[in-house]
Image (tube, rainbow, N blue to C red; front, side, top):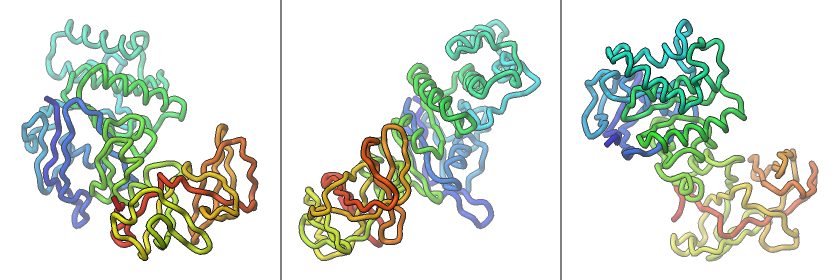
Length: 358
């Protein structure tokens, strides 16, 4: 078992609370991603699990054992850092062997482990090179290899791809995910990149200001966000939020616009006559005739061409919003357009609590 359980974790720096009475269970062999904006506490939480940060309250369990008082080296974890943390004066082989030598492991066994890991990461031909002779992707593989040779119960990864270029990040995402399947152990991965979170995680923990906003699968996070923070943070471009009034059991109005819902969300939550926030993702808006009764009328702002699609930006209720359209649609700055939202995809949020109506 290599589960990780956090119970009532609190962490402060002076009078500033950065983790607030946090509870979380990470399952055995799960790929868990911590995601959130800068300063949300995700890296601090990872360092708490690693034993690199003291806590003011709570308990950390690894493999069903409390590890609060265990030194990092005794927790049977391995950490991969954003800046690789390789020893510049050592070869790739020496970097990977360092932790094993500290443990006084047999030299032949060390060589066997390193050769096996190097082969799996395509590093065999680089074992005698120094870090300065490697590319960013190769350095990241060495950092992964150094963690793998220890055969830890839990892998901790703190934004390991942030220093790589876009193409290499895509490649390394796939490699790390494949590595997780091959090693069949627990991975905890920190990122601020929602694409990494959605494509890599079995489950995602969304954090903000030291508190968990939602823990769920990528599909649940994207389609059923717990609140407006999660809805706005996950998705690119971000979800559009529109203040609306509920005028019937299947319609919402704002200004001269009316949009319709196909669900019984309004009736189920007794929302008739109330003001709520409608959430609509840019990809759930499609061009429609302005004579349609189900429409949002806008003036196109900047239009971004992204190859297979276009992002049309516009202003509504003094907020920047956007729609995602096929590249073949001809749209220019200043065009008067009308959009119809997918009536199955509209989410409603409470104005005060910002929680999603179910």
